[in-house]
Amino acid sequence: MLWVCVAICAAVFAGCVLTSCNQVSTKKALQNFDISGAVLILIFFSLLLCVPSFGQNFGWTSTPFLIVLILAIVSLVGLALAERKSSHPILSGSFIKRNAFILSVLALFLTQGLMQANMTNTIVFVNYTQPENSAISGYAISVMYVGMSLGAVILGPLADKFDPKRILVSSFLLTGIGCGILLLFTEVTSVLLLMASLGVLGFGLGGNGTIFMKVVLSGLTPQKAGADTGTYGLFRDLAAPFGVAVFVPLFTNQITGRISAGTAESAAAVASIHYLAIAELLCVALGIVAVAFLPKRKVIKES
Image (cartoon, rainbow, N blue to C red; front, side):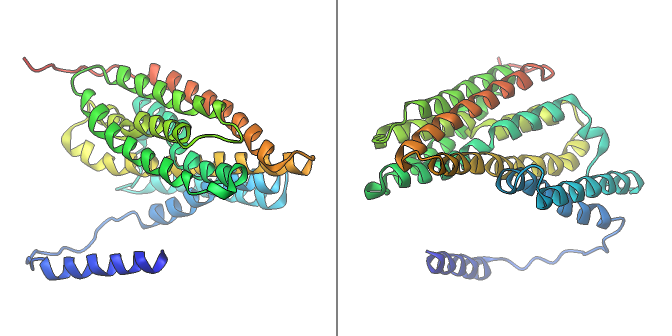
């Protein structure tokens, strides 16, 4: 599969080179670029993604976790000081302090990672419960991606016609249904139930990234919105891997712990997926609360 991906990338790259047009443009020297902020952003967010997985895998009082946590805090303080001193900071403090941004990012971190995490956890679950039929997880994952695409093209545009908060709450309810279906999983879970869980989950969260962007950038001037789009994109793109760092170790460590206690592998996987479903439903509920407190955006309906 790796070599297939390499071949595809090489073919696409060759096609881009052959079809690209040579355009002459005036290049200007890069001025006032926030180099220190960029470096500290890389360091801090890399450490942040390690915090939940290190805590669950090595222990919340272990040396590796404490080292990562301390370094993350130090880099965060350094990042805040660097951005305060920079004339053109990468992360705009005034933009980040807005309630629309804080609540949107909080909701994203609580829920967006469920897609990627449940995709991985479904593979693990099927491997434990139905190792002779492990290919069925691939069908469910395909349906999840279809659901994400449909959610993006169906739910996203609705935020322009109706109150975005209502659309977000509706999509989060669908997300909760997708997570709730995990409670129906057994040792002989059918492929249809797997597809239903991931499909509904993907559809519910498919349009959230676009809708949250509209909410976060509402009320800003075009110039300000253009500059702050990158800041929102940074946090949005980190939401999924952060969720994976939380939910995947939570599920796999639950299985390992139950097996160590004498539970059969398949029974341990079922009990652990049910435990995971409850944890995810709680996160979805908290995400809905965050959405409820978002400032209301006025929508002008077309006549």
